[in-house]
Image (cartoon, rainbow, N blue to C red; front, side, top):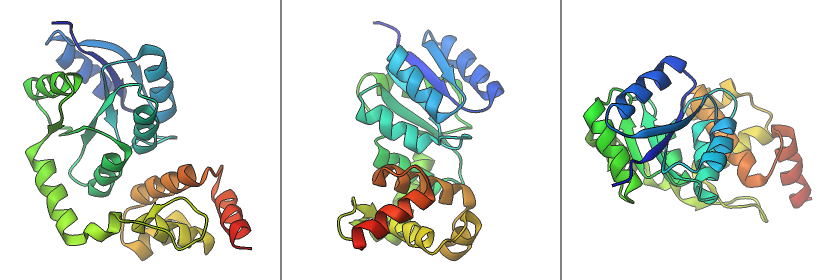
Length: 215
């Protein structure tokens, strides 16, 4: 059987080095690395790995936006590495097309099995991630239902719509976080998703697009 090929996307060099050692010890080939989402997309396009092992919080372009483009362009399957406090990001990655989720505390054998499963066309979920995801969905499933309160706009989730409304009000990331009771990094992820869906270059561009369509 051909060894799976993997691209590592994480902004911490020490974590990438540790993941490389864990995978290569199990005869899994690491073909490249990336420290942010833009580089992850470029390297995935150039290297065409079987699996992109994706961190969600990275400087610049985040892992959710990068996951969406990688999946849409068919550049590889995405296996996410997440932490316990990233529920909102996990849901964002699910909508972006990720097929697996592991905690960053994963041991080497479990990581290797997950990579091989994803490379073989299957999924991979840490049971603890699954339980938290199901609980959150049960508590607020409607938050992910596509809605649009602005005519002519792409479909946004309820949360993305709330973020867009805040952008139109001129709220900062900190103000959005306080009003929506979510973390600032999660706000940044939602803002990135909104801008991507609208095809906007910036928050002000997004506001101009919305107001232009309503005018």
